[in-house]
Length: 297
Image 1 (cartoon, helix red, strand yellow):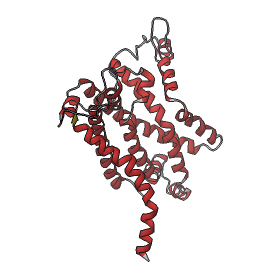
Image 2 (cartoon, one colour):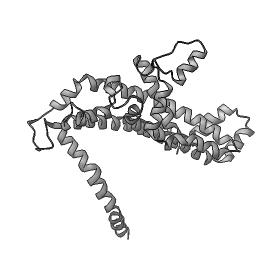
Image 3 (spheres, rainbow, N blue to C red):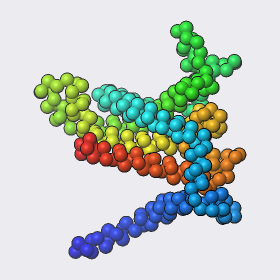
Image 4 (cartoon, rainbow, N blue to C red):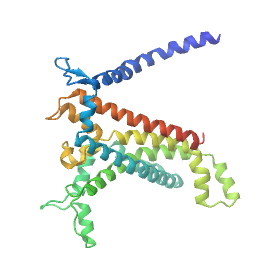
């Protein structure tokens, strides 16, 4: 009977396995092969040799090194900040009884808004040109602070604007998930904490966080993956020529190797994509290993 059920289970899984194999496993293997083919051209399907020349090139490309630096800074800054702020906002929303749905909808609006459109708004807010002064610099002027050229100034100012925008853009989804997780925590735990005269901070640390730790772990893992794949948000603020601003990301380099005016090198793009895949896979494995020890299921 058990063997019969196993046969049925594999039969039901076959369409999904075929789909994953054709659209995920096969392209991944194909990209790995391309990454070792030197000077590969799609038009003629020819290459000059097989080796590590593509990896050697991109690791000696200062634009790719800069993109790695930018991407890691984005990950290190935005993932913890967005997760912590989302958790605090979710706790606040969960404690508000009247107008809870209204506030949840307001906080979720950025998630369904067009990325490029919101990026344009941020660009205008932080703008500083001879003709216009953005909202941020106008507010700084009220306090007697000289205007800052956020988008064309120092590397730190540009990275600040980008990380601020990314954090603001990813928080709505995290807030929605955490609010749902908080509402699933049984009230009995909080009632027991009140009987023991536990403070709000102790209740938050000892009850709230452990009970929703699976969702926090999920958001951290997906946050790392999403941050490593950042590209659209940078384009929304700085435009398509990210190298000009020094704000390119690893995904942006992959596009540049493929489609830019100096591009047309699919094998180099494949090598960059494999490196990104290896980084994301390594970070994900570490996160999963840590979650086994820290997450309470």
